[in-house]
Amino acid sequence: MYVYQSIAQSLADHGHDTLFGLMGDANLFMVDHFVRASGGTFIPVAYEGSSVLMALAYGRVAGKVGIATVTHGPALTNCVTALTEAARAHVPMVLLAGDTAVSNPQNLQNIDQRETVKITGAGFEQMRAPETASYDVAHAIYRAQVEKRPVVLNMPVDFMWQEVEHVRHVFPSYTAASYVPEGDDLDEAIGMIASAKRPIILAGIGAKDAVGNLKKLADRLEAPLATTLKAKGMFSDHPSNIDIFGTLSTPAAYDAIGKADCIVAFGTSLHHFTTDKGALMKGKRVVQINNDVTEVAKNFHPDAALVADAGLTADNIVWWLDEAEIAGSGFTAELDIEALTTHPKGDPDKAKTGFVNFEYALDRLEDALPKDRFLTTDGGRFMTEVWCRVSCPDAESFFATTNFGSIGLGLPIAIGAGYAVEDRPVVLFTGDGGFMMGGINEFNTAVRMNQDLIVIVANDSAYGAEHIQFLDRKMDPGLSMFDWPSFAQVGTALGGHGVLVQSNEDLDRAIEAIESRDKPLLIELRLDPMDVPRMRM
Image 1 (tube, rainbow, N blue to C red):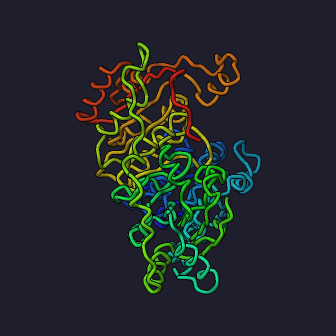
Image 2 (tube, rainbow, N blue to C red):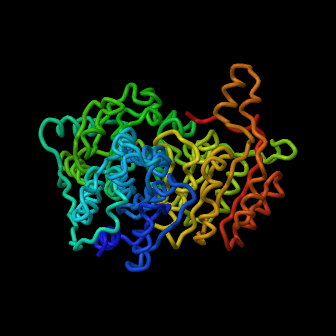
Image 3 (cartoon, rainbow, N blue to C red):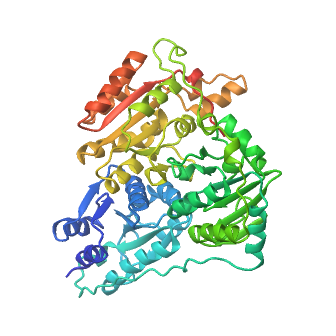
């Protein structure tokens, strides 16, 4: 077969049936063969970087390596921000990137792909020769799995029509075995936990496979459960869940955390938003458990650390507590969990004419959006209020584009996640700037692919993070303000259904549209830029 066919067959050999991308000179025949001969599904994006984000979300939610493809030159440079987000998210994915002909270094679109990829933190793999194509695809997929990051495979266009004998290569990914630590570190950690009077169990997304084990430990310790932002929803069904730990906690929960004397943290690097730059850790013993040694003490130096599996370690701690006949702490009995997790209700009468109160709208949407939703958010000053007020069923049903501080990434993430949860609706909260930057490119992709997608655009007609800085310094915020088009009309023009919300009555109609939707829905919340809540950071 030809090389382009061998590449497509290599994806099929690995069981991959979903490919996100944009076709060009160097990958169009490979994509065609993947669809027509391998029975795969190709999701054609509007902008190259979107393919990386879709594959990132699909792989993260589906628990497999996401696959994307673009052609050469500007197609790859358009992926730099997305690759950086993916690398910092530590999610395995492969980008099949076409390259200009090796024999034509003067090609207008020729760049040094290796150096371009290097700055993003992603890995780079070179397709060495036509006859090594299937091996190189397999090795790129292997590297993505074991390195837990995106890997870009360079595919020279002049290889594509070379004839080769396809050889099936699938390399099993070897990972370190899960284990329980022993020795002085374990003794020290157990001692701190056993002597705690007011312990809290904190979990990050790295502990997503140990939910049951952590609940048992919390019950045994009589300790409340909390999560980082990325693990939002992990303990949503547990009576001792105090929700997100850190700057996103309610004031009451923040005070309760302040009274704790021991934090037992599983699967988190203890980011400074989680610890409030260390303020929430003062006066406490901190035990950190993470199976990745590079995440231990990455952002905060604990009093004791175990490089170990979260679930096995939680079970081991319970065993030692039982062996030593350590009584429960009784901390949860002191707490009013409902009071600790309830945010102040939004005021429907607070907004000026022509606007809706954001907190009130979020409270209404929390009740009206489908309960089995997958929730994702873009970047912007609106996002912290969404994280606090809009729930998700579990940690596997939430993805926030927070790894690189970029706006405009949310809608591609939502579409990619939709392919991993095809039987469930996906809800995206984005801002006006983020939608103009990335959402407007891909909303029609969701329409074309007939996705069950609900997009809520928080439109304050401003770049909010900059707007508030001008106000804080008593300066004119005019340069941060924008006269955008009607996003509701844009959503309709792109083939979906757009609803403009400028009043509480409009919000009622938007909620009716959620219930009756039969195509991607865009709800535009018109917000007063002077009345948008500050970011909780």
